[in-house]
Image (cartoon, rainbow, N blue to C red):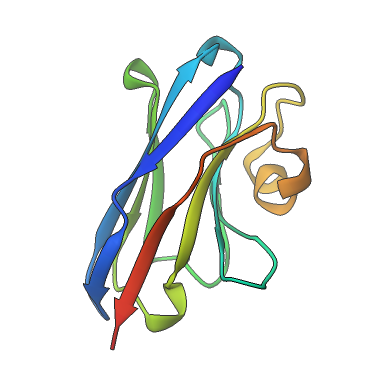
Length: 128
């Protein structure tokens, strides 16, 4: 069992920055790939960024060059640095991890249905 808790969401003006954090507790030794997803009400969950156990990363085209995913293994924490935020980035952001398939980052980004554990989400609001 792995528990994920996100933080760092909030309201920011367009062009601003936020850093999201996701702390993992429980059986963290099993964690392989981790990823950030986002979702607007009534819409499909979208992969934003992912990092695998080798440290390779993958990003959605819409956030490349603006968002950076990283992880601190000693702190069992995943981060998402979001810069140059746009109104269309507003959503609930979820942290997720998989512990069985040891997916590559690009696979984790594209296959939300194979992620094993999810956080409850943190809300990001962008004002224009």
